[in-house]
Amino acid sequence: MHIAFVASECVPFSKTGGLADVVGALPRALAAAGHQVSVYLPRYRMTKLPDAQTVVRSITVPFDDRYRFCSVVTGGSHSGIKFYFVDYPPYFDRDALYGTPAGDYPDNAERFALFSRAVLEASKVLGVPQVFHCHDWQSALVPVMLRTLYAEDPAFRDVGTVFTIHNMGYQGLFPPEILPLLMLPWDLFTISKMEFFGQVNFLKGALVFSDFITTVSRKYSQEIQTTEYGFGLEGVLRNRAATVTGILNGVDYDEWSPQTDKFIAAHYSPEDLSGKTVCKRDLLAAFGVDPADPTWPVIGIVSRFAAQKGFDLISQIMDRLAREDMIVVALGAGDKVYEEMFRRLHKQFPQKIAVKVAYDNAIAHKIEAGSDMFLMPSRYEPCGLNQIYSLKYGTVPVVRATGGLDDTIEPWDARTGRGTGFKFTEYNGESLLLTIKQALQAFRDQSSWQTLMRNGMSKDFSWNASAKEYVRIYDRVRQIRGVNGSHAQPEPELVVRAR
Image 1 (cartoon, rainbow, N blue to C red):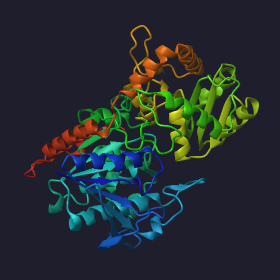
Image 2 (image 1 turned 135 degrees about the vertical axis):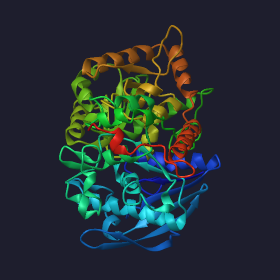
Image 3 (image 1 turned 120 degrees about the vertical axis):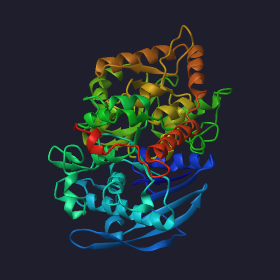
Image 4 (image 1 turned 180 degrees about the vertical axis):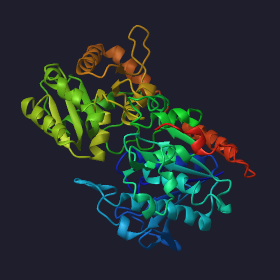
């Protein structure tokens, strides 16, 4: 089967978050299983292509004001995958992918509309896939265009679409006049299609027009159909419930394993945990912490500093938590209020709380290896990867029971010796503090704690199982579209009536 991924970022070419990791890893797993895989990306300034070759010299993309002419280049094949890059410097040769600290680029709708249309046109030259697998709002116009502008194009008659939601909080909202500028029909601006409280919603368009919708954990696929987590689109998803599913993200154990990690001070394994003590000393040295007692547990944090990640809860309890026999090391950047919170706490408790306001991949690995616990008290978390990395490193997760955190962490029961971490449900500071104290209490019994560590280290969240689930989805999509052009899916306006 030929699957074409369409996404706005992918390691190692471009990255702002976990989307890039997924688009970098899932195609490899599919290619290893024998499928033909292409990946389409924008060519950003940060995209390094030492052997770039032009494979489609000119694609004409019409806009209402004037035509734009872009090209497609390739960086060659990697692990059996062909990577293609839409090259249009006026839109993509910029310092950042989506915006500046002041906000999103004002022409993001035009940028990613050009990208989406160029992908469809390029595929006619480079090979039309059986399924387009699109990710997040930046590629949401691919399924929209396929079922509107390209509805009568015989090249795409049997082509299916899968759309993956990585975070419902980002939807691509633009004023109504964007539709004629992008040469999209005005009849898309209805409540059953792309209209959303007076704006055009790219993500909603994908949810309406895609053949199948996935998200990145089973729990999150259920949560986004509720008012609390649906960000206004829960009605659309409930009406599409038969074609909505959650598939947990995998992780790349070639990069994230304490047995091979190139960034950590010592390697270790479930059979020999002694190297973790070396990693703990190295981590504390990297943060300049000289603890009063080196046996104190270290709680690690690697995250965007944002309220979504539970930092409002951390701000409520950190003064009290600092009285416990423990050390917190935090790496991240984001909201100024939380950056300043950690700086203030470090000044107040210099041997208890340390922070690096940055993103540093090497330090992130050191935190996973050198910490005893890993804290993720998220308000919502579509999947989460750091808690999965933590399990492999014998670093016990303390998480809120939401989304992928709930799916991947099993509560520890010292009586039975089963479980992999600690969870709390109610989103408040008291529940978080109580759960951390339970973990600190459990840490005092080192024999039991090592059982808990090994439980987590034995878990396998590699991409193999998830890739097989995606293949089953692709097969279902091909059945929906019909191998002979007999499309089984009803028209979107017949099945979606809610916002």
